[in-house]
Image (cartoon, rainbow, N blue to C red; front, side):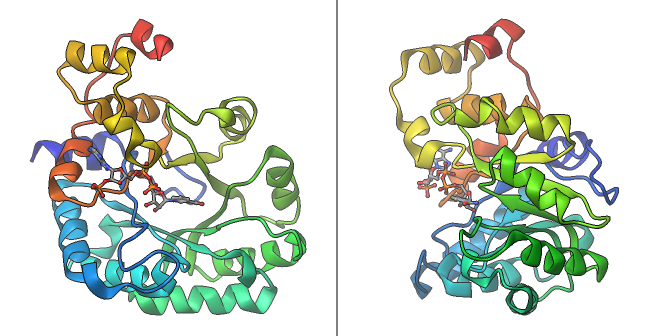
Length: 278
Ligand code: NAP
């Protein structure tokens, strides 16, 4: 299948510290099974969408223990059952109230049980804590990496200063990723976080790459003109722009039609001038 080639082969080009590769396009899951509380009303639909995405070749799923208070991880666990685990890249995250040493280990166990897997590919600190010392959290994160429960460890919503501090608390592991908000609309990370990550081999993962859907529905003239020029949709232009920088995009699609559209963001290029103009 065309998408398989694009997503599994071409996009799996960049090695991480453990030699594993991460796809450039993934599936966000915020809202599947609820947001800040459990909502079982869309379980079946969510499992169907995630499986459709896997079948289209989108092998990366982003989730967190916070989402739907664990129900989202259960949905992901159900969706990946029956697929070869090594073909799927799972990111999960520990919430900021669970950053004490023992709590991190416990949170990981809970995530693995709900996901019904032995390991996650990336385990991230979801948000920095102002109360719990980062040194304590990083010690637990490094243990999870050493034990192989997390293939790689990383962070989310970390500034350059915090990235440096987090790395300084690790004995031998390396921070593999920083998941941050990044889209055509939200570009503050371009100032320092993205350049720092690039210089230090930290993978940037863009959340809200469609600005919560606002980009797809925007009537922005420049975006519409490019969409017309390349015979693509505004969402595809926006995702292509992110992935062209070797930044991973994890849009959340609530329908198979949106998934399919997002898949069409990869496998083609705009002119250099158009990327710069954006
Ligand atoms: P997003 O992906 O930018 O936008 C999602 C919205 O875009 C949904 O309303 C969806 O509508 C719409 N959409 C998706 N594809 C579309 C298309 N082709 N055409 C038109 N509309 C489309 O925002 P997000 O869900 O907030 O962020 C993505 C993921 O990042 C989350 O799901 C979550 O996994 C992660 N995240 C992480 C953090 C963090 O702190 N680390 C924070 C926020 C999010 P439909 O549902 O109708 O398809």
